[in-house]
Image (cartoon, rainbow, N blue to C red):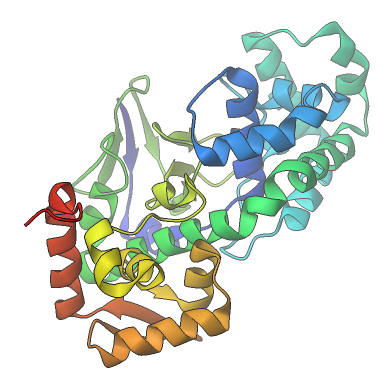
Length: 333
């Protein structure tokens, strides 16, 4: 078991962020590992990936990112929730030669590179080549799906932040993953080799991911800020292109409004709901107005955003519909 020792300064220094390059790397590992899970999202992504699967860019990134240990310089930790793939690419291209050399030596200790990559890995311009490869895979595979993926990650962070501010680190961490536990200022992570790490004021970086499930990933080596990548909540909304509304709720409210009510089991903005449902912003606004007038949802301002959430009546209605999902066929009393 890995134990991470924290202090009050570490709690203050900890933060959440989203990693476009991290999602690209984990997706690439999933797509090149074998058949894997069969979801609508991965089928769409595999279809986009197939035309570039044998390109030099993919072969290079596949070696650097897995399976097993990877080269962190090829997917550096993000700086913020607003991180872009272009900022990631710039950070990769600016990696120091000593960091690149050290990480490649560690990588070679785990697995030998294919002969075809020998010259590429020895090229002083390797960081720039890796940055270009990341952008190529991003544009071909990830970019079309990113608005919906980012919406899921963004909602997860908002949920965690609310729990953190309301209930503290114990409650926030308890729900991130079953392998993480919090006890007296220490984070224990099961299924890792026995060791202890002191953060010494560096704090932890928490990175939600759509593609890391079912496990978690840790980065603890210098010069990077220690980070934990964990499965985001709400990944299921990506599986079939849009969340399927409960049948009984759909018959009562109509399919789109039922879908909105289901999605609002966690607060969301008009833009987020539009991305997740595929409905125009004007259409979403109209449906939200009807649901507000019916007393099923309410809205509140959070910083620059306006978030919608279920009222107690809306929560009761949604909970009752979920409880009776098995009896929601037409004609069932």
